[in-house]
Image 1: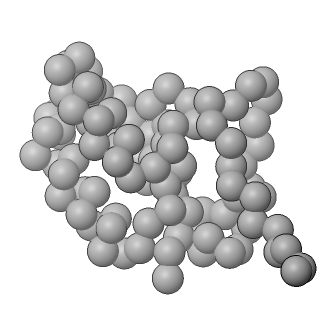
Image 2: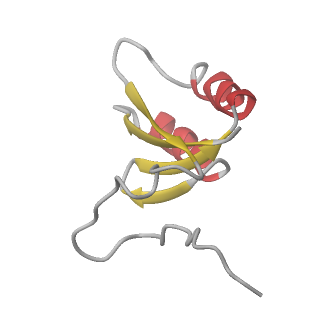
Length: 97
């Protein structure tokens, strides 16, 4: 089962910031600067953590991971934007053919 995660980070060093940003781009969509919306399975989330931990300096940097629930649940409904979003949330409405 895949879940929607909101992942935000504060990285002090610009070099580490770029590495974290590049890793995040492969796992989700940027919705704000340093905030990504990701649809991940448990294994994909662990893989992302395995990529981020070696890059981070845990004495200076911080990552926040919020589980918003299953992709077919309220995960997208609980995100509210004001202004122009950096990327669009996927439309999960059923289509009858």
